[in-house]
Amino acid sequence: MDYFGTFGLVAGIFILLIIILYFIPVGLWFSALVSGVRISLIQLFLMRFRKVPPAVIVRALIEGTKAGIKLDRDKLEAHYLAGGKVDMVVHALVSAEKANIDLPFNMATAIDLAGRDVFEAVQMSVNPKVIDTPPVAAVAKDGIQLIAKARVTVRANIKQLVGGAGEETILARVGEGIVSSIGSSHTHKSVLENPDSISKLVLNKGLDAGTAFEILSIDIADIDIGKNIGAGLQIDQAEADKNIAQAKAEERRAMAVALEQEMRAKAQEARAKVIEAEAQIPLAISEAFRSGNLGIMDYMKYKNIDADTQMRSSIAGEDQSKSKE
Image (cartoon, rainbow, N blue to C red; front, side, top):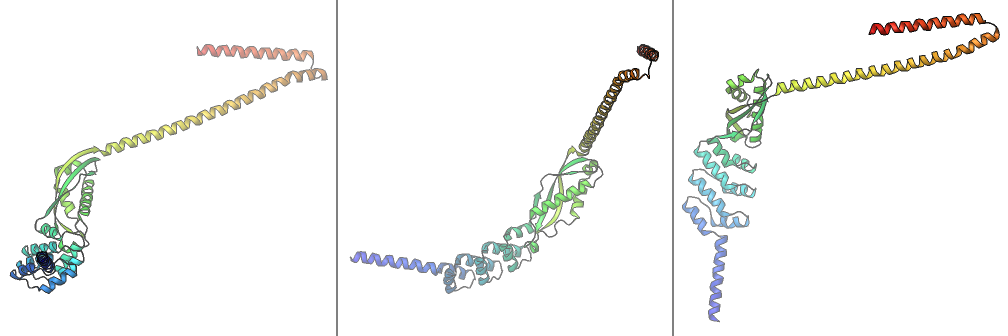
C-alpha cells in the first residue's frame, strides 16, 4: 500500500506541475527575458483566460524587439482576438522597417483584418509583381482583328490596400485600354509596326486609380492577326441586302399573279355577260316576228350581214396566224 501511495503522490505532483507550467509558461517567460522583452508571469497566466496563446504574443514581441520596433502587448492581443494574424503583421512591420517603407501598426492590422496578406503586400512593394493578361481581341479601323497579350508590372500601394480594387480590376482596365488603343488605329499594320504605342497610350490613362496597386509598366508580349472582321461584316450585309431584294421581288411577283388572276376573273365575267346577251337575240328576233316589227327580208339581210362578219373575222384570223409564222 505504501508503494502505491507513493506512486500516486508522485503522479499527482507531476500532473499538478504540468498544469502549473501550462498556465504559467516559465520557459516562455525566460525566453522573453533573455531577448529583452519585459513581460510578467501574471500576464502570461492571464492570457490563458483571455483565450490568447502566450507563445504567439511572446514570439511577436521578441521579433519586434530584435528588429528595433516597439510593439504594444495589448494591441497584439486585441488584434488576435479580432481574428487577425499577429505573426504575419509583425513580419510585415519588420520587412517594411528594413525596406524604409512607412507602415504604421494600425495600418498593418487594418490591412490584415481586411483579408489581404499584408506581408505579401510589403514584399510586392519591394519586389514588383508581373501579371500576364489573357489574350485581348480588338479590331482596327481597317477591319482586321488583332489579338494582343500584355505583361503588367505592378507593385503594392500600401495606402490603398484597404478598400482598393484587386488584380481583376487591373486586368479589366488594361484589356479595355488595349481594345481602345487598337480600335483607334487606322490600320492594323501601324499597330504591328509600333506595338509600344499601345503600352504608352494605356499607361498614360492612369488605370491604377482606386486600386491597391501602382502600375509601373505595360509591355506588349505578343500580337497575332485574327479574322478579317470588316470583310465578314460586309459579306453579312450583302447577304442581308440580297435576302431583302429577293423578298421584295417575291412580293412584286405575288402582286402581279394576283392582278392577273383578277383580270382573268373580270374577263370571264364579261364573256359570261356577252354570252347571256347573245342568248337573248333569238328571243328578241322571235318577238319581233310575232309583233310584226321584223319581216322576212329584214331577217335575211341580218343573216347575210352576220355571215359576212364571220367570214371577215375568219380571214383576219388566218392572216394574223400567217404573219406570226
